[in-house]
Image (tube, rainbow, N blue to C red; front, side):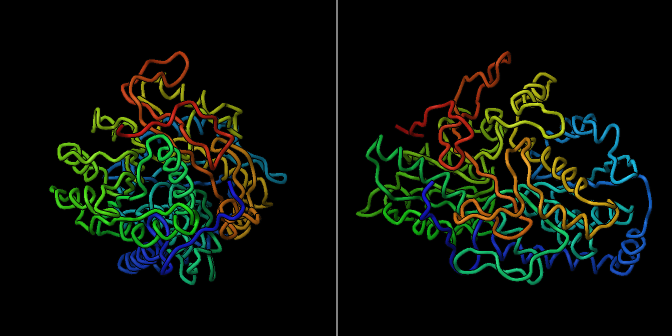
Length: 480
């Protein structure tokens, strides 16, 4: 990683989801709360709870168990079972001279923002001390902003930090991609943002360029939705700022409508729209999974075969790879958790590898990235609770969570990390950055020692941003 790397973003809307997406979801959450008539009721409940002397610490966990985002929550049952067996959750925690039992209540958002607000209201009405939430902006932002409104501590993950920050009233992002304005008092989060996407994808582009002598034309498949428009505005300029000598030429395929069925025009643009009428040898996107499946199938049929496909938002889970079959071969994406990292649980000492092996041995299928980040939510909860005198003091707990610094299942997480390198530093207090690695889908791989071979597996092929995670696969062109 080079010291001169600096993130950039035009028009103040960087990242997956972006500031504007976060702002809109925050407004939607407020509107839903007002429509349900919960404003006064929840305020009374929150005030009453602050003085409680209960010997039970109540934690709410919110995720999209059903609906379009359900793959993110696929391992929830397994992860929550492991968490409940860990000592702090099975036997309780002593804070000061008082021993507390910990109670976890789970809620499903159905992958809908309005439902996310409603189930968060239910948790607040039940008197929770803390809310944990994953995954994606459509889930995390409505939950986080609801908690902020009613002064309930909340920790989020699997949401780009720019989208998260943009969801709060008074928060903003500078044209240079920095978090500015007044941030939340009761919220914290860990994940990464658009500079880390660029820092994961571009090193793979550079290596494939050397292998194949391919050109620097980059095809951009970005839909006309919040995620796509944010990526369209931010990704190319960010790459150009971070890698000014790369000479990348970005070719926009057009702001298509989600769930389109014919990508012929876009494919033709990618085949001839580069410099000098050349094809785009590099490919990047941020679509809905079914849209990428349709596009990628049609691209193959119409003989558009980029040298390297680096994709965001899709191909994160085995279900995506199986849906494409042989066309999944050597598609690259980002990974924020893998069983190959040398990390271990701060609760039990179990390694990431053993954690994933147990998941597979119990018949749950292949490991998935989100199991690690969900686990780390509960590690962070314990770290925050260790730092307070009274777990029912919501402001004190929120402040403690915003300064958590520990090593766990997803590696080192520092919610207030100071560094001269903006790639590594916390954009604001309460934001912990984890560094992803580049992975490719390859066939017939043995994922973990002693376990069966799966038809498709993710292998780590680039660790430019995170040298802690060893390479265990060879980066190859998506198409020779």
